[in-house]
Length: 350
Ligand SMILES: Cc1cc2nc3c(=O)[nH]c(=O)nc-3n(C[C@H](O)[C@H](O)[C@H](O)COP(=O)(O)OP(=O)(O)OC[C@H]3O[C@@H](n4cnc5c(N)ncnc54)[C@H](O)[C@@H]3O)c2cc1C
Image (cartoon, rainbow, N blue to C red):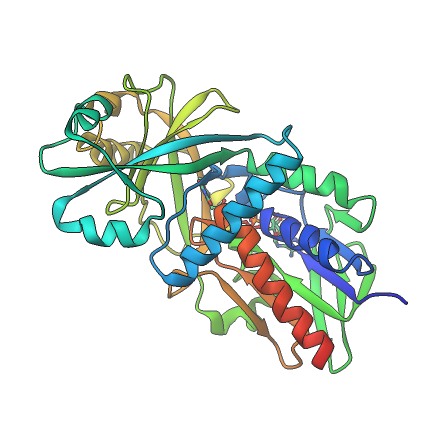
């Protein structure tokens, strides 16, 4: 017996994770993965790949926990994967402490002495915790690792754009820029920040996704204290990227309604360095002067700031999975599991 024919559109970290998990639970599936560029070359290429067990809502905390377990198991089985574990130190004002404890899993309070050693520059009145089980991954490297393994069992089409998707009651046809078409029982749409572009924009219009610039700046030298710091209220972090040999400062950039194709041309600008310096000044002032380079791209954000996994179209054959909200790497295995549960339900009951 043959399994369902599935086409995954978008070979970023999410599309690759959906593909890998699909073949884990349905080895007979006949799978095609299509990307207009090279695998892992979209938002995933720019990702800092930082994972921490944090979520503003119960669902995001669950996705984050499930993803952490998945990555730990994957790394235990494949220690060559570019994943490096570390602990974050989390800081917040006393007034926000309760909210922070609810959002971050596994926090351990620090004694006053430990606190002085870890964060000597921290303003008085801040609480500090240790948050274990965090890591940094080379996300593009992971997507390409998945792709290498997928090639043995699936059709990978790179450099091929999807130009039309036609949904019928009994299947979907996907027309490609190469002139070929693919017939499928279902399509999983993982377009990252291209959520509002291309031939699916009418299908995704109801999701109200907006695309925001994401900026992270590189630090040539590590902070003197050598600790990774996370500031949940400011939504900023300072983390090591051992696979690249530098540190990174991520803060929340507020430039909305950008497009991924224009962001390809984006460069770090003076305005972003000023914003990041301002954010870092209150946190680790000695590092603020180091900021001068980094990475700029964008990501898809949903109105609820939770990832979206839902059917679009009329016949439950086109499943959208995305809206990473700047956390698409650290939630990808959990999002993929939700997508596959929905897909399985639709294909077995439809
Ligand atoms: C600077 C930066 C830092 C970040 N840091 C982190 C972090 O530390 N931790 C974290 O969890 N997240 C982080 N993120 C967010 C994370 O990178 C994204 O949420 C994640 O990569 C999204 O993955 P994706 O597979 O959904 O999208 P993408 O990786 O963008 O994949 C979508 C793919 O769809 C393809 N595509 C688009 N249109 C078509 C078409 N017509 N036909 C065929 N293919 C098409 C694209 O080529 C692309 O490869 C960061 C993002 C940025 C920009």
